[in-house]
Length: 530
Image 1 (cartoon, rainbow, N blue to C red):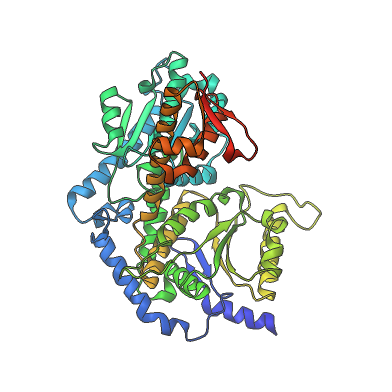
Image 2: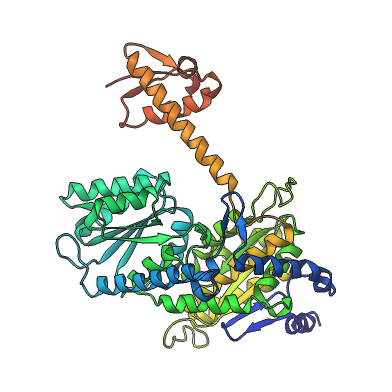
């Protein structure tokens, strides 16, 4: 009887969208029967907020800018013909550039056809391109991608070693909206040095994606890089996959970017419906609100049962947590909002943390992502009765039931196959769901003041380290504790930062500093040692 009851609930709440090949099943979220009636006024307000956003209202008050990633796949909706023309012109430029690269009309300094691309970015300038590359890539890609998405020296070495023999046929794409992102700048400088060490001119292999007249744009223009593509102030990093940030790498890799844009555009249309029961993004937002109590009390676990979608949870971590994780609401009240997001892939998760999901803390809700098509072509029956894909589907269904038996809630998204159109659909679906949920909890999804705080603190660390090293060089015959050094550079209150910086500096050969160890590390002394 319980199974029949669940089946009837499934039929009642299934959201089917044939226009975009998407089904959303929220039947295993145990909201009461009157939930949608009670939430109707709130979701209608969210629809109004989204309409204002898409019409060009100032959404990011901190930076006094609009938020218009929806216009990227429907330029005719942009608030002004100039914006629409820029979008259309840029899309054409991306396609033309890619075609010339593929045809060998644009070549490297040594006249070689580009067979590799190295994408340098961080956050939204890397997560989206990485996700799409992993989801759609094959062994037959036109250009093989590599990514540098941090300022980790060892990562630089590993990637550069991997492409060492083909550096002369590698294009480097530097992505930074402001042009001042430190991690991206560091990656660019390290890669530039690698080209120079091989007798290659970096500018003959370099492409910039940045705002017009940013520091990076001015460098690329002055040094005459191969090409420059624009980013706009009305596109945030975490919603930039359908801009040049995502489209240029995808197009160079050989993907159908028109299909990706079409999937996103059609999903935008479906999610403009004002009836929440027929709007998949609104249903997601309402399900999240139910699960979290509107205050983030449960985590979101993303479980795609498809290896190609493994990076989707990582991509959604930034989209959701950076958008919703806010100290204050729109009224200035302290609310400490957000939803924590994590995930891996099925059925790997069953051998990792499903044990806790089923029997441990009930502090989460799951989103299963089901892909109906296993592979191109036929599969063999492995034991005379089922294929490997049948087993993957069985594990999904089994995990879903096992969680439900323990009153653990879940959502299931179903798509037919992984292709550019379905990827565009998933990206647009979650972009709009985030916007709706933000309205429900009254936070601004389109600014990120907390990110800037960390950047400022990092700048202080580098400033203190520079002063500390200069002091030791000046007093090169002597050794000092971190407390003595902090006092000498007039920063006694920052002694912990000074200590941590000197520990790091003395552990590397980059700085002429040695540590004179003395028991607990904080008692050690440091000395200039050229």
